[in-house]
Amino acid sequence: KSGKDPQGEFEDYIELYNPSSETMDLSGMYLTDSEKAPRKWCFPDETSLAAKSYLVVWADEDGSATSGLHANFKLSSKGETVYLVDSDQRGNVVIDYVKFDAQTNDVALGRLPNKTDKWQALVPTPGVLNRVGE
Image 1: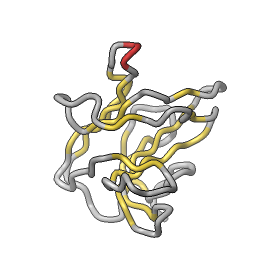
Image 2: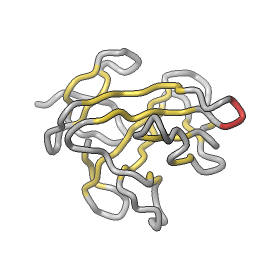
Image 3: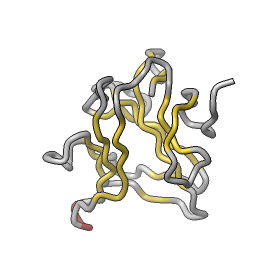
Image 4: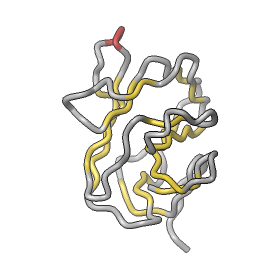
């Protein structure tokens, strides 16, 4: 849920993982925290996610940042739903989503092991393999 962004600030983040053996082009896809606004934040042109890799989007409304991807919305500590939405050309279909309840500081919600539908509390590890606390 919270990690240190490229600007040195601890921010909420959304992490995508590509389990396939092919690079995924995310250009024109969207992230949103509102069903009523499926096109809330658009991945910039030429954004890709390499095979077996992670991509972090900081949910911090820091659109002026020059390093990293920064969505134009923040995550609610009270809980909400975040959606990955396909491009306009492919009809803005919801590709994936996660609904989470009230959150605890410095605890991430993620799938473990990767590629499963099992969500659980994890140590924040933006950009690397998910893991449970020690």
